Structures are given as C-alpha cells and as structure tokens.
Image (cartoon, rainbow, N blue to C red):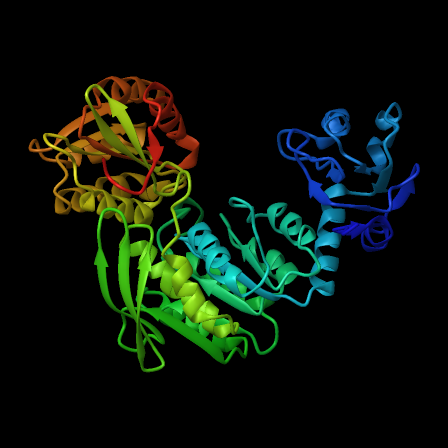
Length: 477
C-alpha cells in the first residue's frame, strides 16, 4: 500500500499516544467529517465556531480509519472503537506533521502571496508545472493557520513541485506560515488596498506581505511585480534579509519576465513574453489582462525551478477560470441565452477594477446589456466610503450603463454615478437576488462580484438554478 503516512511516523512527528489497534498507515488527511474518504485520518480540530470532536462519530461512519483527538476530549470519545492518536492539541499536532512533511520532502517548494491573484496564480502554477512533474498544491484557498499545515501534511513524499498559497488579514500572520513552508521560491503577485481596515496604508500591507521572505530557503528566489508601486519597497525588504536572487515580471522595461504585448478577447488572452532576449507567444484559455500578468509570474517560476517552459506555455492554452473567479456560464432564457461571469468569490478595489475591465470586453448579443452586479467590499475600515465611490471611474471608463448593487457601502457608488447610468440598489443580497433573477434578459452579460461575506454566491446559485446551463463555456452565447 502506498501510504501518505505510516501511523508510526505520525506518532513520532506529533509526539502522540496510540489508543487502540492502529492501522499500518493512512491514505489521506481530512478535517471535514462530511467529505472524509475511507482510509483517511480525521483530525478533530477545534475551530472558532465548531469543534471537530463533536463530529468524530460522523467521520467514523464515513470511513475514517483513524482519529487524531486531544487528550482533554478523550473521555467523550469512549464509545468510539476506532483507533486514535491522542495529542495535547490537535491543530498544533497537525502543524508538527506538516513540518515533518516539509523535512522529508525533496520537492521544489513555491509560496505565493499578494493582495490579488494568489489563488489564480497558485492554480496556474499547478497547471503549468504538471507536465514537468508531480505537483501538490493547496486546495481552494487553504492559506491560513490551519490551511497551510493541512496542505503540508497532505503532501505526498514523491511530490516534485509543492505550491502553497499564503494569506493574511493582519501583520504577523504570514511569518509563522512561511517558516513552516520554507519555500525555494516566494512570489508576491501584487500589493493593493485590501483589508485596509486593519492597516494604516498600502505600505503597511506591503510590509506584512514581505514577511514571506523570512521563510525563504538559503539561496532561494523571490519573484515580484515590477509594475506595482511597492516594488522598490519589497525589493529592499528582500535585500535586507540577504536575499540576492530577486526576479521581476510585468510590462516595465526592466522586468526580467516582460509583457511585450497583450491581446485580449472575451474568451481568451494572448500575450508575448520576453525573457532572456527571446520573445514567446503565449495563449491563455481565460480572458483578462490580470490573468496575463499572473501568467508572467507563473512562467517566471517555471524557468526558475527548471521546469519545461515550452510545456508550461502549451498548458496555459487549456487553462479555465474556476468557480467564483471568472468562470462563465451560458444560461438559456426565453428564446435566447445570457452569459453569467461568476466573480463572486471575493473583492477588493484592485480585483473589482480587473473584473470591470473583463466585463467591458464581453460582447452582449443583439439588444443585450453589459451589467455589473456588485456588492460591498469588506474590511475597508475608514476608507470604505471612498473606495466604493472610486469604482465609478472604472465603470464609466468601461462604458458600462447598467449597474446593479447591494449592501450599505455600495450607496457611495450609487451616489457617485451619473444619471446616464441605470443604477439599481438594494439593501441586502437577498433583495438584489430577486431583482436580478427577474430582470435578466436574452443577450445580457452579467458579472457578479462582491466580498465573500456579502454572499453574492447566492445570486450565482439562484441564476444557475432558475436557468440551468446548457454548457459550461468560455465562449459568449
């Protein structure tokens, strides 16, 4: 059997105590009792809202072959006969197992952070590195204090490339995570206003992101966005730690991985990248200039880790956006159809602008409309009113004449738009959902975007339920 971990190695790594007759090993690790697979270990983590110990019996019913539980909750596990490893603290034990995984791995390790584009770049790296070797990467946006150790602990020993996403809302969050990951390459996609309520300014955000350099392996590489205003700050932060291998990407004339030309359409993108004196044409199966910029970073990493650049470029042609991050649907309505662009996963000022620019390239059919369906951007603090009002400029520049809004912060945008724009505003997501569902028409292109906490995923789900897609597509109807 090809075990992810032998139980002997788990006990040693976590300083755990065996309880019952343990299996020889496990095939995987889960912290979700609903999705655990037979043969996997269930780690009963106590979170902010729920305690995994309360779901141990469900995990066993769904096939868990081993439980990792805390000493303090062991008496409550008495009726369960499944084997267990008992530890002092389950999350801390998962962290120790993650560190043991990193120590045993011979993979090239890449860590990605940034205000925008972390998950997209991580998924792009998974996609373009796969032709060159076995890739292990974070699931979804597993980028926090439990997501990072879980991803590390799940990394198979024969992994060739490990790709980790690292997120933060406050200072000092990235530092302990990157010291677990110990990347050979650290990527900062860009610095933009995000979580502004927790920072005084954008440079403080840059300083928090720069924590990623502190875990870099000796002789490691840093990849930075040369077009970003914080490039010099980040470069100096890396240099202050003795890092000398600093690379850059972007349109800037001095960028090592340079965007020489970009040609975007509503269904794909083509860019010409100059690297080492050569110019390569790169077709991406997803639209948007921001996607092209992420591709530069990913292709830069490919060259740094010694993977095949030609195979990576070929792979980009088959890349498709994911749910909540630009995925497109063609939905039937009446005698025609409309296009739904799902950008509902999250939002900040930079990603809002990118999504608005993406909508501007989409072609409605017949008398169809381009419609921006926007919700509040959270964690903006004292800057909230200004950053919402500032979206009027990009909307007008994109020529968008239909804007449907929800949330108290979006009032500022409503009041900043001229009468020439048809604006609908509702207080809640649910109220806007009903309006959108009943107001969309054949030929329309809707782009739905908000911060995750606003719940605009419900609008997407409602539209998919009412107008079941004829196909998932990157093409407009």
